[in-house]
Image (cartoon, rainbow, N blue to C red; front, side):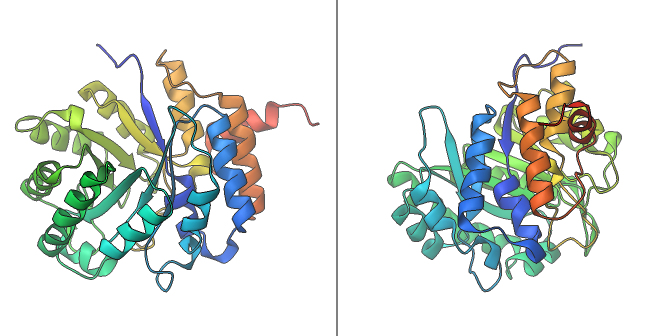
Length: 304
């Protein structure tokens, strides 16, 4: 069996993680500290915020200021989510070099999440992506409800294929496949990746697993065997999805790195340093350290 030699990790904790931690919002300086500490571990692709309306996600209201204060070193990518043209303009004004747009394969989910159908979301994003590209801005696409929708149940694979093709065709360099509910098991993931590979190259895709049912690492293993080389994860397993009831958290970056290093796959990440970041942010948010590997390694480290 051949596995990838190197994996790109997209750290989503400062955005996808913190947006679901409403009771314990961080101050601006603490968010900057979190992002810079994550970058210091060797993580090179970090999602730092979202230009969604503060009325809907007040946790992301300071994203513009975060971007302006971060120093993006060569080889680093600080990405932000944008929902519309207004968000794109705000991102450009703050100095964004890469953005992401987000939709799903389920109308019921997009209606709850962004208050429009899947078709309407694609229609909105097409000119937005084109406008970003004219400014030299790279665009990533998010496709949620890869297999299951919290409102309408199982999602047909042809729906996923149709949306993935649309995102790639409009100019997204990569599409992150989000297993939103965390219910999927290995055979589910294997099946959808096989279906996509019949029409599209899997080199265009990343995977984004929630760990609600403890299946995230198993599903990563399936994705690795299929040839996926980009994986989203969140420090300390922060986040989940505010529009998917019971989606308790993302795949923890520490658990992912521990697995990849055990498989001999390069990540560029200092795991021990990452564990310190995970322990700090968990303490600051007043929640248990949710990464299994992170917590175990933290308990083994000598106290300072």
